[in-house]
Length: 263
Image (cartoon, rainbow, N blue to C red; front, side):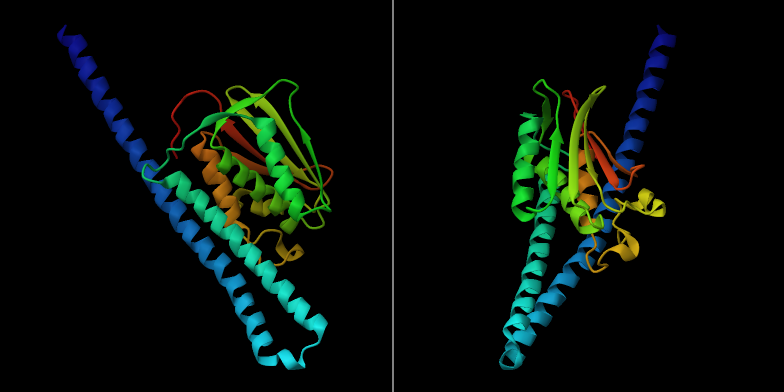
C-alpha cells in the first residue's frame, strides 16, 4: 500500500509539473505570436496609409492641374489602399475572436464543409471575377466542427495571397480530404511558386513574399500569421509547398472530434 501510494504521489507530481511546463510553453508561444503580429501590423498599416495620404494631398493641392485620367488613377490607388486596410482590420478582428476573454478558446459548431467553401468562393469571385476557382469535395456530406467565420477568413486570406503574391495566378483549386482525425483543405494556384528559402518562415510575419516578383509594399505577413493562428486554434496546423508543375499549395488541417484545443 505504501509503495503504491508513493508511486501515485510521484506520478501526480510529475504530471503536474509537466502540465505547468506545457502551460508556460503555450504562454511563451502566445506572447511571441502577439509580438510578431504587432510587428507585421505596424508595417502593413503604414504603407496603405501613406499611399492614401499622398494621393489625397495631390488631389487637394493640384486638382486644377490634373487630367481626368490622372484623377481616376489617384482615386483607384486610394481605393486599393482602403481595401487593403479593410483586409487588415478583418484579420485583426479574427485574432480578437480567438483571444477574447479566454485565450485559445473558440466556439465550434458542426458545419458542412462544402457550404463553407461555397460561401468563400462566392465572396472571392465578387472581387476577382477573372480568376477561375474550382472546388473538389467528397461525395458524402462532410461535417467539420469549426468557427465558420474564422475558417472563412483563413480561406479568404489564402486565396487573396494566391492572387496578390502568386505571380500571374489565373486559377485556384480547392480540395478537401479526411485524414485520421483531421479534415485537410488544400488551396493550390498556378502562379510562380514560393522561393524554397522562404517556405519555413511564411507564417511568422518576417518575410516579403515572392521576392522581386511582387509589389514589396504589399506584405501578406499578417494574413498568413492569422491563418496559422486560426488553424492552431482549431487543433490543426498549416504548411505550404511548391508544386512540381509550378505554383504553390497551402494546406491546413482542422481537428475532428470533441477534444479541447488550445494554442
